[in-house]
Length: 437
Image (cartoon, rainbow, N blue to C red):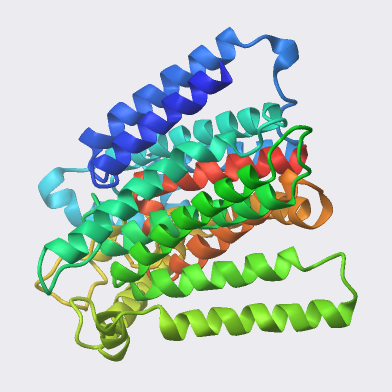
């Protein structure tokens, strides 16, 4: 059943990636249906005594609270209560009353149908998290098995991106099946730590009797080759933050990997050497075109100045809906009233996941989201520092993935791309399973 679940989830993720990240509901809804059916089949067909213990109480409460806050945004409330909870929402209703008529009840979300769609998407990611936590818990003999599907997908995406760069002319770039190169880089940067740490784990594990010593070396070389292809594709995507996030995650992985076992002075020297290698990689890996992009921050389709103005407008939206937000998925419509940047262009995303989540879910939802993110990060860090053997390297890979995507989210909206959000939930489930085990 575990093999069936892993393979099925891999096919679902592959479909979402093939559809450009499944940004459109028509592409993401079949994935949600498949995730729901797979979850139902898995838990109905698994014997109760074989299942992993449920998540700890704090994790359960945080997951439930996050879904409840979004659900509360689409519950119709009397205007008197709504005026107290979100005055800006009532002002918006009153401004449209001459055309739309009066309302006795309304929702906190300015786009309740869109919020419902995003709520279903988030519920799907929660199911992926719970499934992978369960699978990771039960895969103690083969801890890397849950990571294999997305590694295969990442390798194929990277290979396609490299082919695009070399075959489509001088202005081409690597973006795989994605519409946006930054989201392509986001998917790959979350995947990259796994083949690297898997190779280390293969070389460090004790060999079985009669096992040829050359076989682990062959497997490790294959995994390092996979990592090299993924890293090469990230550089060819010309994503500036993609490369920075990737190298930062490798620095974190190297530092955590040396956090124990050596004397302090040896550990300090080793960490300095790792940092030097990362800096050297930043100097040597970028292509001429990527270096040029670092120098042309104000000549892009979305310049640094425009991005800063979007963030300032977003802060005004946050101030108008401070506690409950304007509703998940309502950023574009909510920003129109406060938008001063690029008046002739549409701004669908804040290009900063944290600001957009704060604008759409308010301070309450944002704090729950941060608490849940730090809770999952705690699981991976605890396992990376405190566990031994294969589980430690797996936890290090998860920590590296979290570092990459958390940094990249400061200047992009990877968490709003369903395929990337599903991969993050996948890795979080692996981290939670490894951490609890």
